[in-house]
Image 1 (cartoon, one colour):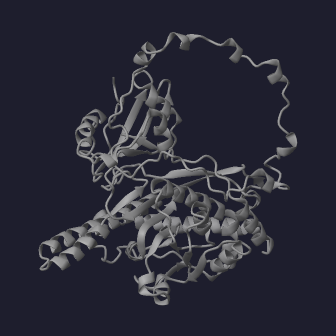
Image 2 (tube, one colour):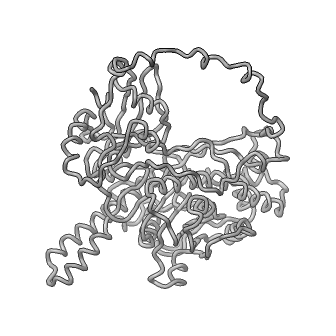
Image 3 (cartoon, one colour):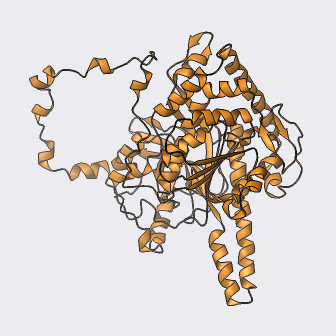
Length: 545
């Protein structure tokens, strides 16, 4: 019986790819070396539940919709369409300038000498950089802030919610109490954090240099119950001056859609290094799903991993020179705190296999547009469709060592389609014709109440369209672990007849220190169980190895 029928193509990163059949043999030998506590009780039926990470169309919660409507009702709506258009043009200019700077940034400049001055000295018109360690921030005027809340805030919220929800699923024991949001804007990430961890968050520090954005965030949060303790700061420096040293580290630090607007690679590295120093457990970086955004995420991911590996090497050297037993115990405790690994989306901590290719890693989240988006985001006076796709890139890093876990397919065997048919019982072939056709009672059953169906184009009763999303969703009993046995599906799977082709980023070593990008092909005849899972897999889901 075959465990996995796949046909991997040549990986993009030459020399790091392996055939999945050879990897399966290595898993069988390495499984005996793992502790028994690392074994997982997975079955072909529970694999898809554990691998599911993508979301369907996302509905912005009613509380946020009401807050946005209330905020826009208090604003001057004159020339609102023009404000949204000008904000979009401003983003395009910033993106163009950032793309030129990103093209000039090399890997050697990033890792070998991160403190070297940037080769390009261009600055976007809306960013004011005083120094590498000084105040860095985007200055939003009132018109830009209003346009941002009306057009961009729901999409930013949906992307943040998707990423934080995945962090919670992959790290179920992680429940942050102290949170730092860099580049908070109108507190889009704060709304997402409250939806994902509604009970654990006690204190939130917001870093936002724009006073207009700070006021917008405060207005949107008015009249909400159960809010944590919230403080706003203009910069990281002001945060460090205002709080005690032992309170500076936060359980969760997030930066959403902010690093791409910092034009200098040197300043960007400085910011990320400071954010990592303020991180006690998990750091999340989120950027638009563009080639530039993907490159920024890849660079910052590489820098943090490289910096922590260098720190671990220095700590290991210092352990050999520890003169006393007491000092050695202190160094060992520090070693346990050192290191970093990727929680998501990467299943490994090695060099990104897409780094020197024409592809870039990004994901997409579909959301239903709010009434303000449908009103103000128009093309030639024609209302837009009722949903939009927000493309984003992200990385979630956690301090410490990646846990060693058994790979999902270790010890599992799958029947081929021919073997499965041979094992069928005769009674399974009997067809119950009563179940094939509806009875008269079923045909006469009345339909649902038509009054409860409200057309999406109507905004008069928009709030009745959606259920309150503040409630916690039911937790799945089976989850994917943080070992290297789960690959990530990059791009939409291609379904052709009875085979499914998937582009998967996966770890090639048991310790997840290296990775590769491969084309995986699953056929129904060789492996019907995994073929069913492959047909139901979506862009962004995990794939077991």
